[in-house]
Image (tube, rainbow, N blue to C red; front, top):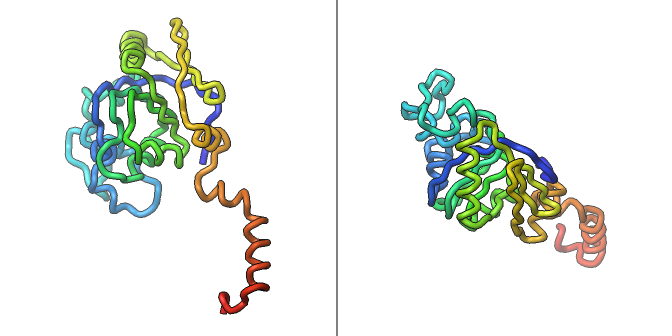
Length: 212
């Protein structure tokens, strides 16, 4: 997965609480095979005026001009700032796949659902937790200033803007290191490939009947 070290991106304000995974990635798209194709149906029910389904040509659907990501100033946003309990609901990893494929690199919220948080780490998406008053301040700045962006330094756990904002966020050290190195679970296991292979060879010598 793509490593996350320092990043500068435009912010889109989506200040709703309890945005669940069905809103992020509606259930009809869970039948798709593979990990691609989810970016164009991210926030599908909010993003388009007609209902969507697998196999529909989404380019021909009428977009909802009221949805934040459809506004011209936010169409290239790579950071979302949201309310509390982002990613609640079902455990579908497709929600994170959609965000990542759309181009979102960081979601800032005052809290996240635990499973969503872990899915984000697995897929290179930074879930940054900030106090609600700070998320509101960021959302207000993003509303007032076209092209408003944040500079995020994951190594230092800092978020700054060009209007004087400078704040810190905390993240578990293991999650931070995995994002910086771009490692998911499989990548992390493969770091120990030589030891695993050596163990298997030795184990076959000691207990060959286990491998018959």
